Length: 346
Ligand SMILES: NC(=O)c1ccc[n+]([C@@H]2O[C@H](COP(=O)([O-])OP(=O)(O)OC[C@H]3O[C@@H](n4cnc5c(N)ncnc54)[C@H](O)[C@@H]3O)[C@@H](O)[C@H]2O)c1
Ligand SMILES: [Zn+2]
Ligand SMILES: [Zn+2]
View 1: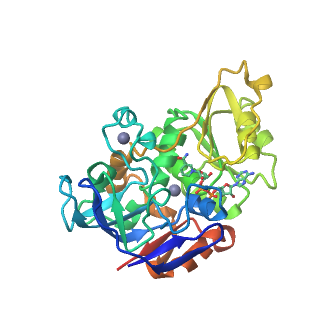
View 2: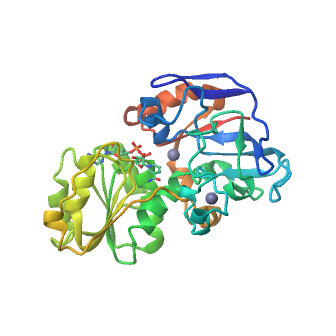
């Protein structure tokens, strides 16, 4: 089979690789029909995730068709259409029992990280029964690819941790796929205001189409002043950090209102400054989270019912064998106006 293989920082290739086989009775082999590329894959290619070693197939998102199941797999049979979760869950360890699949002692984020991932014609999924979801017939499978990672991430790490409630004022710093996923799912709770902040005008215009009430280009405008003007000089009840750099985490600290929440979603490669000299008495909460994907079944229902239009996040489509070209398009997101790309293996 063919797979997109990582060969150290800056090196990847679409190459021939052994087809995966069942290793444990709880495994399944899935033929990938649609997959995508994540910002995290770009982090890996930059060398920011050193646990990823030479020879690893990348990718942790996708949908496919069950090809083979181990003898302990009970939920799926050959031919079933499945959604693969970016987080593998054994369902029985202490963390899984608490619903914190991200810290599963036998799984967690392993696909395209510690084991071969989904940017390939076939993938082996451990703990198949509890790490995939059956896709009902006549579903729009492209729309469901957005549920492998970015929608649960925006929702769990941003919206749930930010405790967004009816009437809240919300700011989301970063209008990439994850920030936009938070924007879409924040609207489940009817906030009175959602302000998107990003230096990319195209992403701000997309944000307005997806329901943002206000947008701020913080390359050209003073974000803090503008947010205070919009909120009667209070700041926002919830601010979601969806970038992962010092500057944006500091911006969040300046935007939060007394009693508010800062929900960090961004992956930080460097330490950030925490301004306790101004925040100590503001009664705020700061949260962090690695996505658990515990909300995936709920999100799937909202996509199926048409309540959540996850397909809006897809901007480009390629064949799976054109994946290197798709990476170029994804890397040049600002120039190509890319959000998510879909790679199809038909
Ligand atoms: N916590 C988790 O479990 C989890 C899961 C998936 C992704 N992530 C992280 O979420 C973050 C966002 O992911 P993404 O795929 O949307 O990334 P992305 O790179 O596509 O989007 C980031 C956005 O931030 C904007 N930005 C850059 N500098 C800015 C600044 N100074 N002020 C405001 N905006 C700025 C960019 O223009 C871009 O639109 C990344 O750090 C990613 O690694 C976290
Ligand atoms: Zn991802
Ligand atoms: Zn577990």
